Image (cartoon, rainbow, N blue to C red):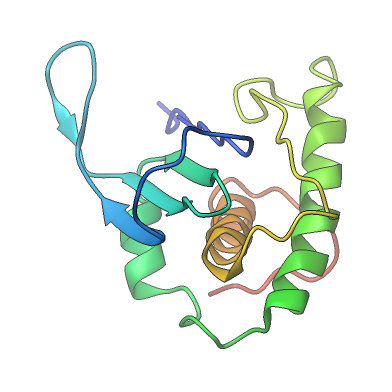
Length: 145
């Protein structure tokens, strides 16, 4: 059976916490009580945005295969994220053409907002992981890392 994609990407206003940037990888309990360690949360609470990604294998891939932080500039990450997310959102709107199990929800990403480096880094790397893992091509060249 193919891996089932659990993705929850939330880009929007979230209740701000008192800390600035936080990178937390924590287990998540699913209905049957089994803990999954494939949850990555990066928050930029000063800007009131966070990304939560739940996908089997992503946290391992991020730690072992992703380019290190500051390898790409924030402007590079933002420009790639705009292209990837626009195509992602187009596919969400076409469930008869694209697998609705892969493209479950729209990503609310506004290019006019500065989400910060961490949020853009996480989104970019998830898009690379997603394309390589699920044999999808959202836009242009996809690094095979």
